[in-house]
Image (cartoon, rainbow, N blue to C red; front, top):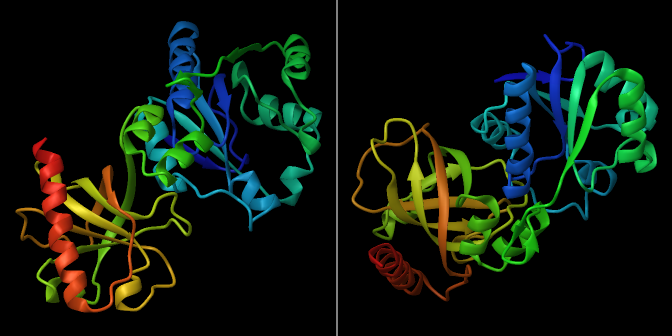
Length: 308
């Protein structure tokens, strides 16, 4: 997939385009991208996505912005997995936020992205003060010669599939619901780095994974499945995602994974950790022996989960 930062490079050909933040790539996003691929094949158009970095809510209200489900890298990988040929990442700053709806259509959709067919979600708004809507796009389509359609929301377990719904499920430890909303288990990517060897000292060696999520959408201890280059099959394990309150509280969330039946070297490997089942919340223990005993129980609980 081709990735363009900004709009200095125009699309190499006419596009069928969809627009959104695409945080997490849930079932609603996948419906949009499925329709995108179908139109691209039918009309011989380039299937393209326009997304934004940072998330607009991070720009307007960074303190109250929601936890991200996916980093930019994770999001782009998920978009590519859905068969998209090109993605434009618009830098969301004050200048971009000030674009009027008409300027957005003229300068970005028409001049830069050469849109011939536009597919949007049923709640899509754009431009300064979110003044742009479906009616405005429909009128622009008549003037500029592009088709327009809206894709209805996807309903999962009686609720609309949305990034907010996924965040709520993850925060509540409802991993099965999150997986149904996403269409796959929730996962975080990261590179294995050298840690303080605390897990090894406790008898449970861990892969310490550097993650780019400043505010992860879930915390606690989980049964996980790990994939990565050089691994011939997924590895099962137990993971702690949190701040390690029992061994010196970390300033940034850490992801530590103890893998079952594995003794190789994973340093510098980029791993994908799938969170399958929540075992418990992170806890502070009165002493190291209590922590060690609980880790042993967590390992047994995770192994029991995989058995059943």
